[in-house]
Amino acid sequence: MKKLLMFIILLLSLCAVSCSHEKEEDMGQLAAIAAKGYYDELLQGKYEEFVDATYRRDSIPAVYREQLIANAKMYIGQQNVEHQGIKEVTIANAKADTARRTAQVFLVLNYGDKSNEQIVVPMIQYQGIWKMR
Figure 1 (cartoon, one colour):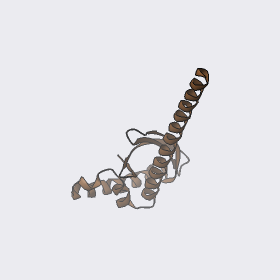
Figure 2 (cartoon, rainbow, N blue to C red; figure 1 turned 60 degrees about the vertical axis):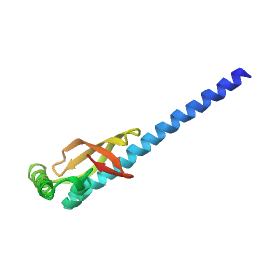
Figure 3 (cartoon, rainbow, N blue to C red; figure 1 turned 180 degrees about the horizontal axis):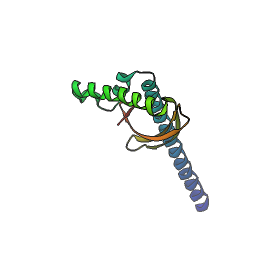
Figure 4 (tube, rainbow, N blue to C red; figure 1 turned 60 degrees about the horizontal axis):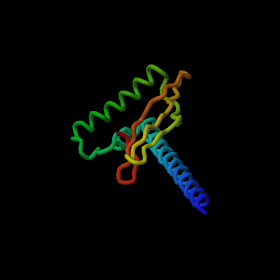
């Protein structure tokens, strides 16, 4: 009887571990989808929306927000000159820390000159929405 009880406890703990890992993967995937969406907006010229996708954007002064928007425009312009633009953004990987509600999203920027670059986008879940940090 004691062996059966130990077996059941072991089985339940294995289920709990596998379920928590599955939740971590789901959280990472959700963060990755959000990050890719924000970068897709950047490619579409939606610079304000890209800047507004940052964590605590309401607490930054309007002048600084305008500078961030100008920086996003300059970044895209620079990529157009150096790499014939960013043609596509793909998700490479994502790792979530469910306890802290954070994630590291790895995106691949595929350029018009056929080169690519992997970037890391730190994300945080705030009020149920994934935002860039």
